[in-house]
Image (cartoon, rainbow over all chains, first blue to last red):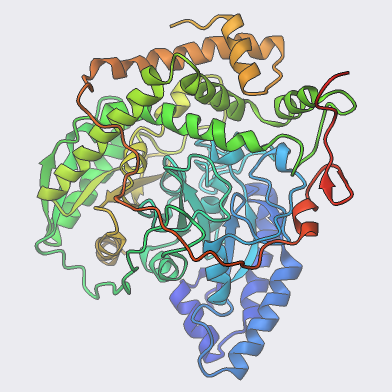
Length: 479
Length: 96
């Protein structure tokens, strides 16, 4: 018999509804899986088994008593530890929020709770989502389930590893510069980075507010598209939330991609990319052509500038957002008994990790008197050019296909002494965040060491449904 | 672009971060490398380009000026390191 933890979300929901198994059985199966693997993978910062089992029993009662229970009733999920869930610690992978227990729940999480899902726990992340490997988590790194000598990617590495290892059917991630897509690529799972403004940022601990998005990681496109419809959409509590309605996602029944124009940007197949990654992505594009799509060479000429632009804008916004960690309203306080300055500098200097401090320093510098125009102002202008590249491309093509990252999962410690080398891992994911366009990452093969290769499809603003349809058609043809 | 230790100390002060001597040296070097990389942006002529304010066309919304439920005082103070009489307590701000 197939294990319950191998079922797709659709199969889970059908089985729960039919009474083939209970939510308690499903939840216990996942908790059992976590129990046996967590010591090797370390996907979670906080586990909530008692709360999950109580939720499962409540879900079972609802499934028995209601004719039309909420669609996702009884389905376990995992939540990245930068999204607030009332009553459960939210550490953001940082010592500075070690004892923070949010009194409210993020809108995206609340919507999935309302739809009937059950949180299993909070997944590991680079501190404040700043990183590409989870090596920046103050609670220790997550290990890649495909090979534990390799990183799972980041910052949503805990979520991607949990999904890859079947410790959860799906997990919330967040994507500010690639933090959903890159760990999906490294762990061989599927994830959506929505259009900016499409998913509420309320209750998401802020990193780069003009870039932050809440996404979902799962085993395939069908699973995440099912959940997306519930957690996406307008939220009056987020000032940059958009009112454009989320369409009902209807996935194609056949792998037919006739008429689809796929843009293939030359700038994403550069020297230095791992040959197997290029090969895997090009083979996937060829398969989509065999399904009826046409591949069109395109240019996104400002791609190379995305990295310097991102590493000004994101740290600048982070330096402002992280000013709130001052030892007063939340988190531990150090340097007590002295004066206020002592408390600020001691608390922040000792409790932030080295990457977070590096980015706060970089952002503070870029915003400081005399440098604002040269750095931050310049970056916001070049951002306009990067966005214009996408606007122009989407006049010619429906979607853009590219590698997610230049390499497969790298080894622990490979980039820890060289922050710039670590930043270069994000070179293909940053542009979508700067332009605000959605991106869907999914696996397209393996390298010679058996590590997954990921591809991303990027689409025009609000076209997540198109990305899901194309991705699903690809997965139908390749399964 | 090479940041001096003095400049690093100045930025750290602005950011309210106390750094160790080792950190100051490391950040001086690493931030200098990153700023060198960032200088690629100088290649682009952006004199006539508008800076991006938002990636989407959006208007700021107003809501009805009505009271709504919010967090209780206990909830708000619940995560603070120190409180007194229903307020956040902080070390001495002036004088001393």
